[in-house]
Length: 412
Image (cartoon, rainbow, N blue to C red; front, side, top):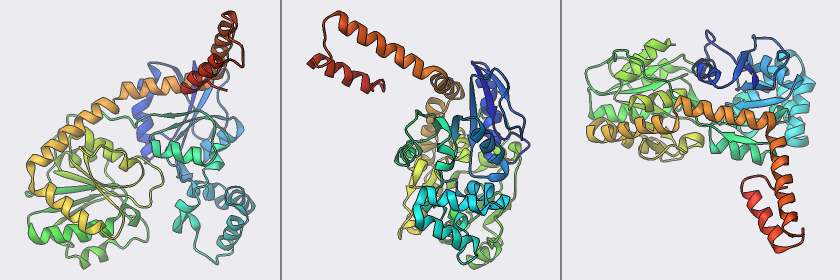
């Protein structure tokens, strides 16, 4: 089977680019995969199925959605909330009417009126202030012949949005752990937080909770790695919580080798999120592979992680208190860290193994390319066999056969 593969790739600084760099070699062992050059709008001749990786970043994914709209195919939905992507492909291209139409199509007249308010600068941009309320996923779903998602959460959201095509839940693949020496940035216990530094990663809440813990454990260090979002005043917040000097190590964007070294040197990792865009986290997958205990927000895909590998913090009035308690536990109990770390390594090996993920991808693509024809052939053979033994369409046995077929998604 020949697959046209649409995705950002390194050196683009996106998680999806790193994801595809990991997945492609394993996928090529199973399928004939052609990577489509960035900006190209059509799949090569002779393609059996096109695979489109879609995330919420218009700089990385707008050209891919342009191609998808020309030729429908299987979509890997890395984010369910795609408002920022849609805004970039409409408002960002001076197509205000396209944005109005997208908002009305998915959210009715009220959505169109809100979009008018955005275009007239009467209300803040919805892709910044309320994207989770207006995901605009239909902009992509209407062109997808099949979906590959990384969580049951996104599968259920797609169904709730009206998508009726095949959906395959495929875990995020785990990177093999490289032989890189760990870099311990401090002598005492260290909590690592990796990714873009902004409010949706709950950095204000993390700083407050960590400052409280450090009041009792003066040798504890918080390691923040990743670029700071424009408009997020990290320095002011660090000053407020007394973390501007000792107690915090700050690094910006880190290349792959540096990232692994810093993560390996942390005693525990924190990955908080609210609101969630329906994404999975590459840094969480790396943490699992390294055997690092986790603290995560109890939302979306993060809620699906087993309790044995992650402490889950609800996003409510108790958030900071429970986050503080979780950090206290992991910083003071080496036995808990070891037990959770071992469970994380086992989860990465069992569920997120690269070869297993590649096999699931191949199965999903084969179904998309020929699944309907196979299903029709199976149904025809079952129907003929039932007729041969005298089962009529209105017999009780026919109803039981239909029920069993529906269980394996072959029912009509």
